[in-house]
Image (cartoon, rainbow, N blue to C red; front, side):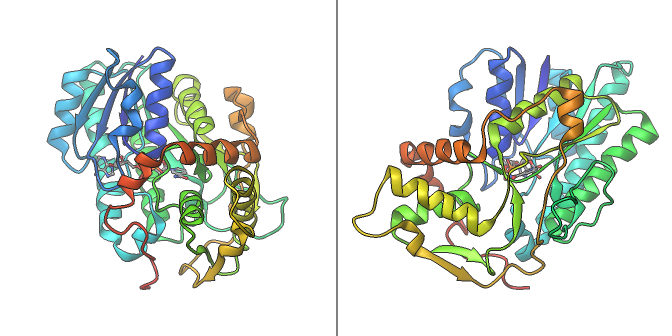
Length: 349
Ligand SMILES: NC(=O)c1ccc[n+]([C@@H]2O[C@H](COP(=O)([O-])OP(=O)(O)OC[C@H]3O[C@@H](n4cnc5c(N)ncnc54)[C@H](O)[C@@H]3O)[C@@H](O)[C@H]2O)c1
């Protein structure tokens, strides 16, 4: 299958690109190369004959038409997005333009290509989204997000993703475009941009800096190893039922404080400090405005219908992640120089 992957130079998109190539698919990686992108993320497949890269912006409809005409994909996996909640609080405009207008452009470019090809039934437009569109859950562990949970986004980021999900469903209902949607919980793993919680904690710990925890650290997230997400996404685009959405999660709920303590414990084992524990560097900082208290995914449909299972527990995945950051200093040092990285963002509200 020839897959047009948008956002393939980012964290999750690059895992999808690497996995798709390893499974024998052809990939066209379309990415604008924003501050969050890094082509090193796909260096291991860059010379593969089945890999192509197109630097293009999803806000530029003409560029998208050209990419569809040139490469004639069998499927689209649409991951390109502005993805950092804190940046969405400081500058929501980019999130509206890329996540909403950009998705609209992708849908229209895909639709006109699909119509010109005679509306092939096996074409897929797979939209990759987040569990944050469902809002915040109470602490009751029996309550989880299912595919039927009502949308209730609460940050500019999640509202822009929710809008894009609605557009994708509308293009299916109105024009018949064969779409599949997935909504996933928080990812972590190799190539995670160093402004997100897991890499911030690892890299600040190693640098002897504070490990900032928003609020009291009681916010609960459902963590999934990025390569397990990539595997689920490829199953969704190849086996998912048209018009259906699939929730993807690792069933690994933990508070932010527990997550940070786990990372400290792993670092204490792998790179012990001269004295004390990395946990001594934990510092509580002002909470994010509108910080959702709990996300938890019920992945029953994805497990039952797509046959997907995560390959690692959160402890195994965090250990692999710490190893990766310890062994890839050249990768993260460069990205730490980018605009805004290392600064506290999202507190202006
Ligand atoms: N990170 C998570 O935990 C998570 C969880 C669930 C869903 N998602 C979704 O998965 C997708 C990928 O997330 P990520 O964490 O890999 O994001 P990321 O920020 O690491 O990567 C986004 C990529 O999109 C590209 N991009 C941004 N704006 C663009 C534009 N206008 N035109 C073309 N390319 C553009 C960037 O250059 C970057 O390579 C997003 O749609 C996000 O909403 C993320």
